[in-house]
Every structure is written in structure tokens, then in C-alpha cells.
Length: 172
Image (tube, rainbow, N blue to C red; front, side, top):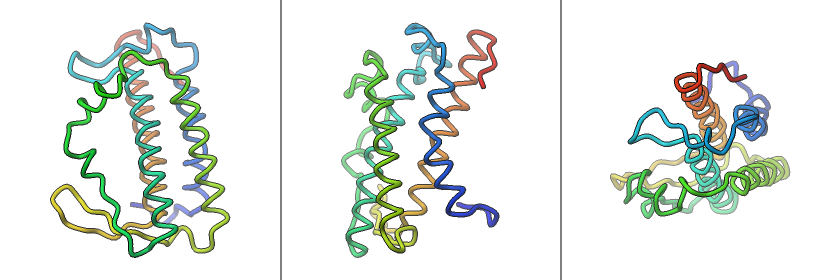
């Protein structure tokens, strides 16, 4: 997943900067702007924000499990059993204010970074992940952190594209 030029510190910086990157993309948006979406069957900006916070919260548990039990098994079967759009509906993404999700994202990132920085060899610690097909794969804490760091970057691009399409605005 990482390029050879990426270092642990660069990835941790990208991970730490994720909430600020997201908040910058949201700066100046009205409540109705948050409901803009690329199409009727796509997530709105508001739903993307909640998705990012909840996903980060879920994967934080994986990181903590890996730091405590290299032989453990982490599964998201309960989550993977339903389409993401259904979770969005179950967790009321379309109607909730985004502030608590932004706060959760900021706090979770700070908490995780402190934990990783205080745990020896944290980056390489691992856990077994059970995929939806039942196969098990050993994943490292570093892999999860990088995945989550890039997840925000990718969705910020989505937010920018939504705003460009609807308002003709270029977002920083």
C-alpha cells in the first residue's frame, strides 16, 4: 500500500491531518450544501462525513486489538453483512448534524496517534482480519493507519467534485 518514499512519519502526519483536511473542505458550507450529492443513489456530503467518522471509529478498535493481541481475530462481518447505504440509513446519516462526527474523528485520531507513539513496535504489530469471504489475512497497524489516512483524502476529493458539479466551486 505504501510507496517506498513514504515513511511512517509521513503517513502518521497524513493520518493526523485528516480531520483538518476534511474540515477545510467543509468550510463555508451551509446546511443545505451538506445535502448535495452526485446523484439520487449516492451519498451526500453530510453522509460522507458521518461515514468517515464511523469508519475511523470502527477501525480504531482493530488497531487497539492488534496492539494488544497479535494472535487475535478481527472481523467486521456484522458490518459487511449489509450494504454501506443501509448502514447510512440505520445510523441516520442524512439527517444528523455533522459536528459530533467531526469531533469524534478528531479525538479518535489524536487518541490513536498517542497510543501508537507510546507503544513499542506499534507500526508492525498485527492482527488477523477475517474477510467477508471467510479468508483470514494478517494486517498491520501501519496498514490500517495508512488505509484510514488515505480514506479521508479520497472522500475529500469526492466532496470537492460534488461542490464543483453543483456550484461550480473549487474547494481548497
